[in-house]
Length: 293
Image: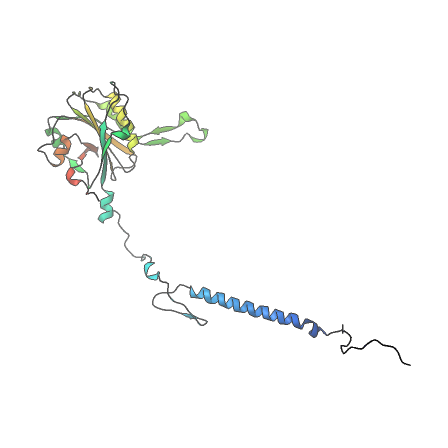
């Protein structure tokens, strides 16, 4: 008996019972290709890293076929030898720079008859000079100048006292070395100052000497020293490395002498420039002024 069948096609029925090898073959191929790509990428990264590996300038090494080479900065990056002698900062040009003295000077101009109020001290500064050294001054040199007199001198130390946990303002103590030096000097005033004399305040401190504190000390001296309205007043502030940090001395000199015909330390003292240092005297000389760059 003939059955009516639809048109037959050349494609057979779809098989659903494929074996496990036939089903997973495409996935395994893809997995192998991913692993191969990862291996190639890892090899590239290793080759790039090895190309930056540090080597010395005398030899090179080969690692898995990758040859490394020294960096261009190798000859410039060198450590200090273990047994090398440490660099002495007190010798040579560095030591010279450390031992130089820097002087700031100017004129003090009272803005009232009483002299307790001063004009802007920043405007009073008229000179800044660097000297290669401080020169010692013999006591005999100071005494040999008849028209030069030391009116007073004093020293001061800086002090900061923390109030602690109570944070009370009245328990906080701040003492500034230049102001302490001025207060000390005012307790040892000897003699009077005639109106025809020039009065010079000479401050000497370490590298931490602050000009603003010096000018405040100048105000204290002007307000408490007995001077006439015709007295000319100048100040010198010298910072010198060999002076201990946090300390300052002040020497008040009245002079009517002239530096004309005098040389060296004698000429400086005649101008009224005299500093108290280590129980003795010192000054700066114009011949030691550092040349301008």
